[in-house]
Image 1 (cartoon, one colour):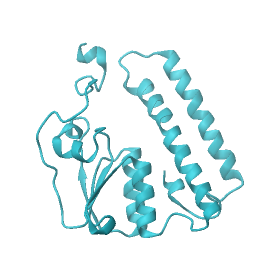
Image 2: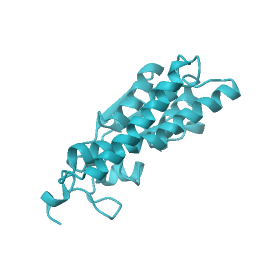
Image 3: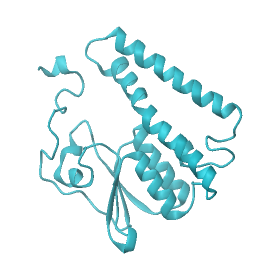
Image 4: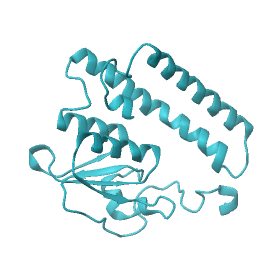
Length: 193
């Protein structure tokens, strides 16, 4: 398929997973090493780290140049999607990889004991809304893809994902009409997501 026919990401998309280039990732002085880009998913983790006051090193992964397909990045996230993170001071003081924005947010909130309710019922409500985003987020991404990046404007794709995006926003509007935050009265990772 020609790059023009395949669209903006045609030169980097593939049906095969795994590294396409041997290259280590940079590493800084702090335990937390964030590998990301200023996309909606990438920004979520940065917001959480800033809210938590955690020191970290951030490294840009240029998805338009295929940085997500280097061996160093694939070692952290075999799905080659940003964000991804290493915590060199993970459980039992051992390094651990964390990938997917929802997983990273949950990991950080639990590690630092903030941005997540301690009350069991409130925590479940927080998880409901965190995972609502995990399921809803791709609809926003697909709408953006069909609306902005698809090489051919496919009205069905645009209409379908626009309608679903509006419905999901309506769910959020209704929840926030009666609650200060998604999980109730406490700012949490559900709001960041």
